[in-house]
Image 1 (cartoon, rainbow, N blue to C red):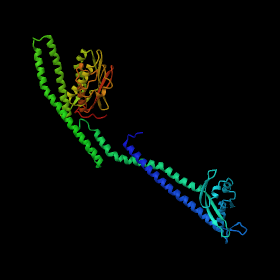
Image 2: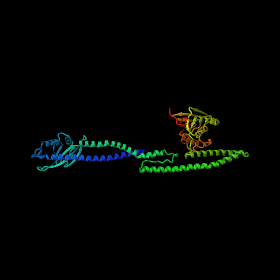
Image 3: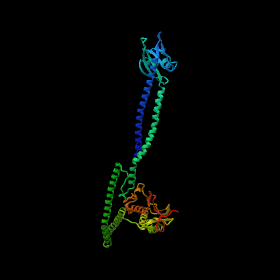
Image 4: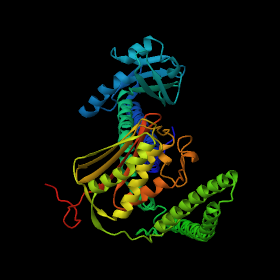
Length: 480
């Protein structure tokens, strides 16, 4: 599984590393504790064996006697406690004495599980009984001065207590490991968040940079070398983009300015030629077609100049209160004949005056473009509805048609410059591909938003929203 979040990845790596270090330390600690515990266990076994060796002596008849020289009560109690865990053999492993009192050693002897251990003369030996219990023995040779043969003392103990102690010790580490992983993950998440916070601030600032504010530069209060390197590289990239955009804008504006004069000359000369009475119909038709194309080029260049100046921030809008109801009624009345000519009916629904603040000339121009598109791409016999309403201190204008519609894949691009959806926005309709770009610029420059909904062969809805203001002085309207 690939982790896409850098913060999560750092937290996971931190948790894994700490868990690995903890597991290594715990393993070393467990091995050390286990070694010390087993060493202590063996040492105590040897002390018991030495204690018993000092308390045994041969009898004249050849047997073994205990407590030579008289033992105290305390030593006698210790002797009674250890006797069930003692087995005495000769050098060949033959049992000479065993007082196991029917305990576990008696079952081990009867089951022949101690045969290997009884043949030992020294050292330690571990075994596990059939019931799973573990035992450990130490063997100690003892030479009796009064007897020629050597005897061997085998002292054993159950390892249940030792194994329980080590198991509890291991479980403590095992149970503590998830807690360590969780705690290190939380700490790692927090530290990773602090580590990537400067980069998040850079990303948030970079996200606000668009083609309209490429002169913005990122200034980070974090002085870490990595952050400052990123900020410097990003600012350098934005500077280069800004220079490229400025050069492109100036080039577009310069080309448009240079083309206006020859286009105006061509239009004038074409008009003069069309006024001549000596032209054949073929030549007149050709000149008329040229005139239409020249007008299209002139409109295209004018709109390119407007958008170039808009990008440069040269336009200053007049700020007056505008009654959108009066504006829309006037525009619908003006464009109704064009709609009738194309067989399209226009209707208007107004539920308010809809005062906004801005430049009425540009608002009219934007609305004309939207209404012209609605008429241009509507089918004969279709209907265009213009709706004006107020909602939540907003003025909303909706223009819907029952035309050819737009493909879903084209909708995100209809506001791009020089974009014409295919086949609907074709050149045959006379569109330049700049009308909706101009509308979007005007609407957003007045603090509004614009959106488009469309379905192929079902029609298109264009909605524009503007901040509502009072009619008195063009001030923002107050809520009731």
